[in-house]
Length: 239
Image 1 (cartoon, rainbow, N blue to C red):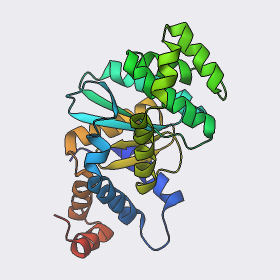
Image 2 (image 1 turned 45 degrees about the vertical axis):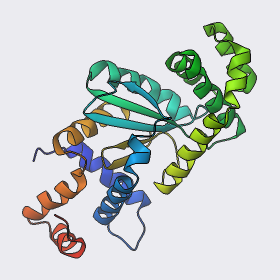
Image 3 (image 1 turned 30 degrees about the vertical axis):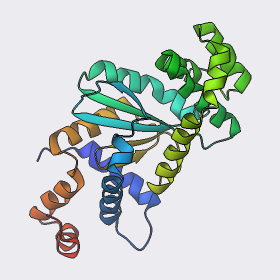
Image 4 (image 1 turned 90 degrees about the vertical axis):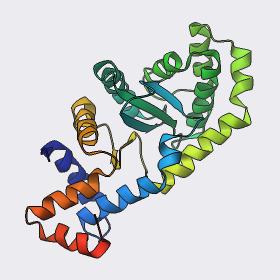
């Protein structure tokens, strides 16, 4: 197996500051992968999700984001760059408005803009606004893009739009995503603005190792003498 030092270092750094005392770092990474797999359809195949990039790509990057999140704003360029760089990357954007009521308003407007074919343009414009964004300013941005404002407001109150956002919140909480941006790639969950190189590293890792990459990693390091990994293989019957 190819060694991805940056990938593994980052995962263990995140786990070091978030893992519970009752489980080791490696166990927490493994449990997270199991949680992702148990919610696979909701994460990767929800028909109401916004899909960008290559819809038939061999690797899918899922981002949970909030329009009022400063780190999400900084990460927009990474996402655009990734899609331009990797023609075989599928991207799913999940509206995850957890900061305030304005975040929820913007998420609904953004999803509604898709019904007029403006999603990516509107999404980018909202994230490019410095600082927090109000409902009124979001409408102003929509108007400049040529979006029908009356239809946008009506569609943003659509129950399907609200259900899509609620489903993303339920899923995010179930997966332990407590901040934005939050990324799911394969069976790996990472939080924070880790940048283009960090995301590219994980995408490459998943592309090589598939959906059950964490199990393969544990097996690999166990074969090289890692005692904790060997115990986990026996304890959890990892194959």
